[in-house]
Every structure is written in structure tokens, then in C-alpha cells.
Image (cartoon, rainbow, N blue to C red; front, side):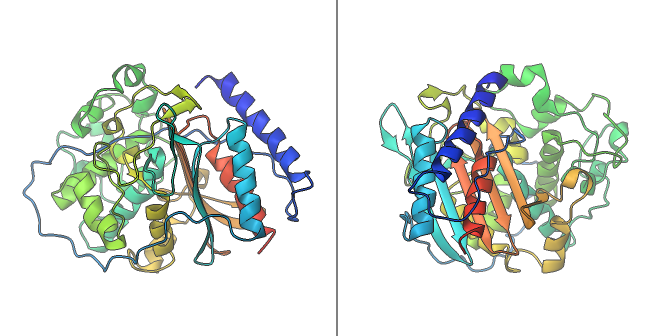
Length: 400
């Protein structure tokens, strides 16, 4: 999306928030918070082809989570205020999608806004499926840590241990540096050919070929630079270690144990409540981007309910022991952990990750000390999901 269009959208969003928070209908004590610009992290990609290694026995899985209610309409003053804010964003053309807000294990709001399919006048719903883009990375990172916990890999292992015909320059790169974006690899999604080929399916091996012969940008471990290339390689490591395609491994490791039945990588898979179409702006369809072009960096689709299952599981040791979860959420260079951005909002510890691709934007923002979670899924790439999530969180902090 052109920068000037996005900048205008952000300015309008900030003005809308000021108008909303100063209106007579506004009764919460939280201060007005201008919507900040998001980092615009790109990502997207689906199932990889089956690896050549022999299949391994099924990975053990804990019991599935209990069913959750679907649409949760606003109940109470806080939820009504949140709903009013989101409806005003929709009216201003600044948002369409689904938002889930939870506090201390209770869902305060989970509902759709605007259209999933504007041409057919199909509304977004709590069960509508969205592409997650870079919000895929927390899942990929967690799977790597699960495999480490099982003794199937080490974070200090050279990535060349898991790649065929590995470039000599990559020998010093270890798995840990892929997780926290300090490997020094060039970002293949920044290459001109990415836009030229994004509508066509691609295999992980084809993605690898786009950057394998390019020089490193810096000495591995010396700097932070967000690169989708890092997580493409992590997906290939997962496939090599498990003997399964990335999508199958993720289902066995994470999705099935949590009952995340509406999460995966194949955009053609049946969607019970429909899959949202991607727009740049309301009514303006986005260019097609086949998710396979981002593989483990951004292939996943999901729903707000499935993401809430994931969020709540991270308060337990169902998927991973607490010491390893703490490693994931320990900030490194650039404030990035393993698949998560680590920071704060108004002195509240914040663990989050955004995603953005043609047609979609997303954010999961977790405030674990407050037990507050905000999930924002938009089928509109211009939506500032990070800013929306932050503003919603400040409203929750001011009322609970």
C-alpha cells in the first residue's frame, strides 16, 4: 500500500479516537491514545511439499481444549465502549475484521465488524477465518522449542545440520539466531521478484533458492534485523526433524492438542463460517498472494476463537514447560524474543506479534501480568491492528 495512503489512514484514526473519547457517550476513565503506526511486518505462506525423509511415529498430544462460545456481543459498560469504538472505525473505513478481548480468562468481546466479502455482502463473524501473515511466527518458534524439549534439536545447532547443500557462509548460523532474527540473512520478501511471483505457489526449496547465494548482511549474532528468510529456514528444520510437512507437524504439536480445528495453512480447506477475502481498503480487493510464498514465516490462517485457545494455553504448561516459555519471552537484540516482540504499554508488560500482507493485517497482544489479551484480525491491509489493540488494552486497564 502507498505510504501516503497509510499515513492518511493513521491520521484519520487518531482524530477518530480523540472524537470518540471526548464524546458524551464515553464514560471510561482511560486517556485517549493516538493509534501508533505499526511496524508493517510482512508475511504469508501455506503447506510445504512432503519432505523426502521417512515419516516418524505420531507426536504425543495432550487432550483438546473445551469448546468456546462463538459470537460474544458487548455486555456491560466496557464491552459496549469497545464495540462503539470499533464500529466508528468501521464507519470511517479504517477497520473490518474480528476483535476478541479477554481479561482473566473471561471473553469480554468477540465479534465481527464490516464485510468478509463486500461483493456478496457477507459479514465478518467470530468464526470467520483470516490469514495471519507474520502472526505465524509465534507458532513456528513454539514448535522449535517443543522439538528442543524432546531432544530432537539444539538451539546452538548449526542450521547446516538440517539443510542439504548448505552454503559455507551459513555454517556459523545457529537455530537460536533464526528465532530472534540475528542471523544476518537477506530478506527474500524484499526482493523485486517476490512481487512478480507472489500469486504463484512456491515450495520451501524454491524460496530457499531465492536467497541462498546472496551474501550475509552482517556477522551472525551481531545485530537484529527482522527477516522472513529466518523463519522459512526454521520451517525446513521442523520438516527435517519431524519427517512431516510443516502443516502436519504444526497440527500434531500445537493445533490438535488445543482443539484449534480452524487453523492451518491450506487456504482451500473448508471454512465453517467462511474465509474473509483480502482488501487493501474497504471495497478495494488486494492483489492475490499465495500463502505458500511465506511458508513458516506467515502461512497460517486462523480464527479469533482458535487464537484465544492458543493464548490461554500459554498461561499453562500444556504445550511447553514454563522455563522454556520464559526463554521464548526473554527479549534479545531489538526487543525480540523467539517469535514474539517483547515490550510494554503504559508500564504493562506486553508480549505481542503483528502480521501484514496484501489484504490482511493482524495482531495478538498479550499482557500476562494483567491477564489481558487482545486479538485483532483484519481483512484489510491498511488497518492498524497494532494501534487498535494497544488502544483497546488501555481501555481495559482503565476499567478493571
